[in-house]
Amino acid sequence: MTNDSTVTVYSTQQVKRARIAVAAVFTVHGAVTGSFATRVPWIQDHAGVSAGQLGLALAFPAIGASIAMPLAGRISHRFGARTALRGLLALWTLALILPALAPNLLTLCAALFVYGATAGMSDVAMNALGVEVENRLDKSIMSGLHGMWSVGALIGSAAGTVAAHTATDARTHHLVAALVLTALGLIACRDVLDIQSHPDEEPPPRFTLPPKSALIIGAIGFCAVFAEGASLDWSAVYLRDVLDSSDGLAAASTTAFALMMAVARIAGDRIVDRFGAVRTVRTGGVMATAGGLLVVFAPSPAAAMCGFGLLGLGVAVVVPLAFAAAGRSGPNPSQAIAGVATITYTSGLIAPSAIGSLAEATSLVVSFGVVTVLAFGLVLGAGVLRSADRKVTGSAVGEGTTTKSAAGG
Image 1 (tube, rainbow, N blue to C red):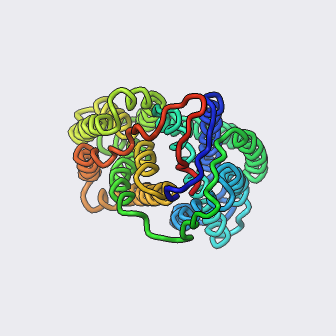
Image 2 (spheres, rainbow, N blue to C red; image 1 turned 90 degrees about the vertical axis):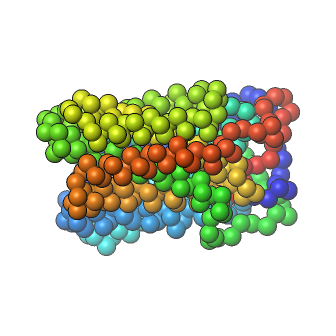
Image 3 (tube, one colour; image 1 turned 45 degrees about the horizontal axis):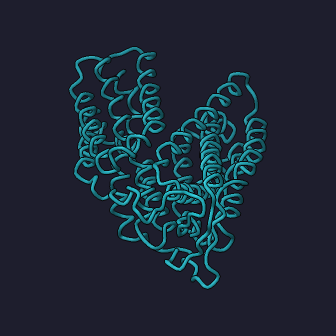
């Protein structure tokens, strides 16, 4: 997006409706992920793959997302933000059908590549529109939007758990879920902002390296997502193997971490509005570092659970603010958001395996020492998210308010 983008006028009510609409889009997006995650064991059995082969296949969503995300800006430029989001979200919800149909490793990898590619492109489009709505409202909403994604993931997971408990065929479950979520997504997209690029504006390149600003912002996102992925996947193992807790208490640690993440994101916008993005992330970094230290030196499972809770609170708002900062960091918001998203997706992909490899070479305690160091990186690097704070040019909403597009690609 260049500075000669089309300027569109929206009323206060239109922008408020757009906020609700984009929150619904985030919820739908999260519900797809939750629906898929609960049926992975069924998909593994149906495809007849080993645990190692499944691990290989599960790398393909991140590969597909990383390759496809830069295309989102060009699609938005060509069709407009609303039409682009409508199409990309529908492709993502319908892609839920594919993995359960795969009869072998090769087709499973292909299905998950498509699944990831559509996830990544719709992710960029909805985050860009979220930044645009935030600019026009002149109040922080990105943390709450990502909180709604977590709510959607919980809803999808709950439905998937019921389907698995009743031994429902995943092909049937995912077909029904995909059709319902596609319909809900299309309804939600009706009220998102319809940002159009200027007719004479040069379209963004299909594939390009992310701008330097996105790489710097993405580094902060990398630290947060690494800590998040490590805690989600390894907190239960840590309590069981390091602190000899019961399986039930170990599982509760993971649930507590995820719950603290969701609560912090939903409440995060008010905190960001009051204290600003930099102070919020820096304080969160202090909390996450303290949580990591508590985990590493925990004398009991209860202390470790408190540490994981602090980690969840500390890193929760970093990724939403990283997307917001990327969306305001340069003339091409979609390209910058795609760059940050690629880095965070990569972090989420490598974190679980990196923690496992390091634990095998040393110990889980040492692994979470590394997590603690990365959490402290949030304290040192919070300043790069200064652009996540709304500026005067972001314009508060009023009748006849105008602003430049951040979502047109």
